[in-house]
Image (cartoon, rainbow, N blue to C red; front, side, top):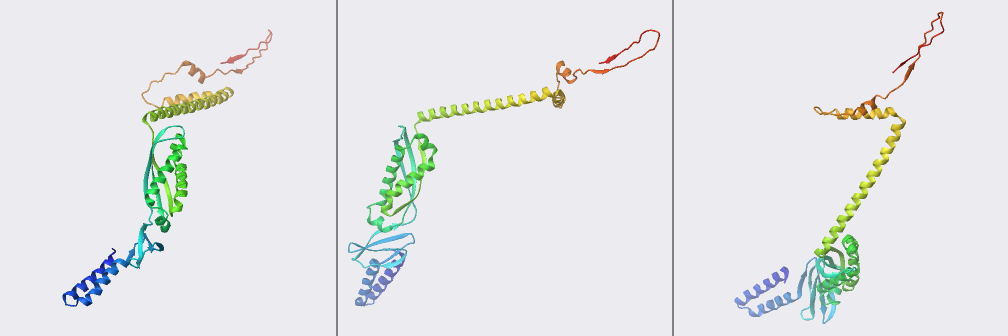
Length: 292
């Protein structure tokens, strides 16, 4: 009984009781009858509720939020439907995937009643029906999916479940907002095998990346060698830069091979001819000096 109805019934009962004590039972009797009629006829629905009313076994109306009255005995409220968004958790234990792997899947469904008349008259217990339909659809989806896709394509699996369940619950006046798979549990032995496989794949990828890096480095070295071969001065500058970088640390002892020192001072030949003409009685003599 809602607060408004309780208040009116209480007022009528108190008034009737007072009149009875005052010696007016005849006047008090209608107040008691009125209290009973108010209790049976005056109803109030909350904002999220729908009252499905039958009159003599036939659908009379679906009442929404607010106060309304029914005819006692003739009208009957057969269902009070909550139209807010509801959540139902469901699971599938030891369900086999398409590649015959047993998995345990936990999921949750968000739904609401959009047609209170169908939810009350088209099915007996729509909450239980939603749970059964969700479990059946989940098992069907698992049986049609590979384990790899079930683990990696969660969003696609959620959308598939939503579409399948929506088609089954639409005739009951129920809409599915979303379906979310919370957990997919696989056997421990299979987890170890998948872990080793993933580790091997990561090692393979690391080796491929390392090989690509080595190939790129070798190519750069070839380009540098070609540059140094065409420009020996560039090699000397590079060697001097290396020595400079290594001598930045104080107190460090650096051993430099003599061949490296020689590379910094490559031999260059410069000819400076000097001719001395001496006109004497003898033949002409020419002397040349080569400075190293």
